[in-house]
Length: 199
Image (cartoon, rainbow, N blue to C red; front, side):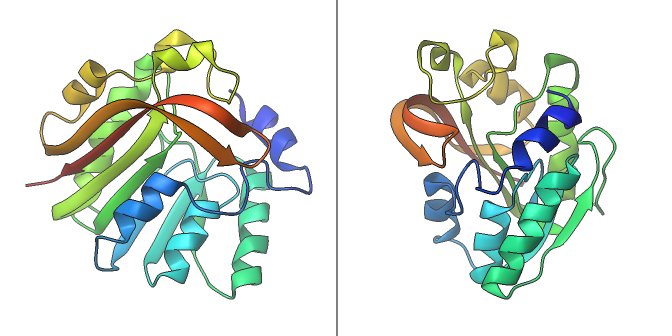
């Protein structure tokens, strides 16, 4: 989806995915000591802001200026600061071995760049650092609760096992859930969840 479409979506006054964090992410972060965390494709900032309120040092990026503006509003509301960069996922880079966690929440990439982006994210992690991901799986095409309508941008276990084969996969599961994340993620959904550790 082009940056212009995301800018249009994020220009609405309401937070289209809500202001509360993704449930799976919040569950996973509650198990970890706060450290340095990176949020690719962070949009309006709900997950990054949540992490900052829990003591994490947050870096985030997105290609949408409107998304960043909403994230900055949310930061001000919660009186916290995050480092938010405007960049494309194929262009951005962070220092190697600098992050304790990299988070992908409904960050869907075309096949031509997906593996490259996922493998680049692994380089940002310190040894012992974790990838936390929730995305839509192909069964999501049966539901109207959000996500790409392009099958090639929906993630399977085989796909993610290959993308993250250089790290230890702790959790990789597909399941049906109910989303309650703003107007754009509502109702029954088919998701895939991944937690992996860099050795």
